[in-house]
Length: 330
Image (spheres, rainbow, N blue to C red):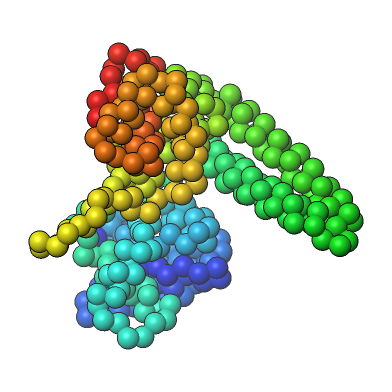
């Protein structure tokens, strides 16, 4: 396997790979981050490393949206693509005691990082319907955030000297945002309804007391294509697993959440957890047991959030609606 480091920016892709004739020499190349640039990249890779494209692994960091189309193009072209966690790549770079920083040096660091990994999770694109669902959900969450921000601005404007004119303008803006929010939600509902598999998976999650359409639609992109091999992996991805720190004989605080993962999803699970505690007998008993053991209400609610994720994973994996007699052991 030939590993190629690819440092992604808005305008360019900087590449680095070992010279096949001299392993100690690094080949550096730069192409535009565009469709024409990706074609240039493909030609350069084939010239430098002739052979099956599946023997070339391109290592790039997740950079918001700038890496997405390039990763899809290269995967479709037959190359192996690894989209790595930027934090882990940065940790590896720091471990090499690098004093300088440039795009070319970052590409070299990514190349070495990929070559040192024993287990590699190669990039697999989502299905078109999941890609569309993810895009609509991102838009929905952004609209909800904007509406909250404008409502806060409206509250402040009521106490300003010239507040009437400002309030009228803000209310117009809010009406536009709320109309767009309804259209986006309608688009999500239509997309899910048009897919038999998505509809079935959403109904399975909604069979769990505490999980409704809004929560289930947020979890669908993670659960629908079976990327996680265990419920614990899914909970860790969302950031709902405890993180413990221990050293020697020192006193240690109790475990706390790692803070990693998708904070928006964690926020979406908070109210469902409160609903489940009240209306789901198994989860209500689970919450009560944790409180009796000395857990704080916050810790117990977080545990219920994690249990809901486990239950959602279970009903999707087994394609079976939730049954209360499954039990919910602490």
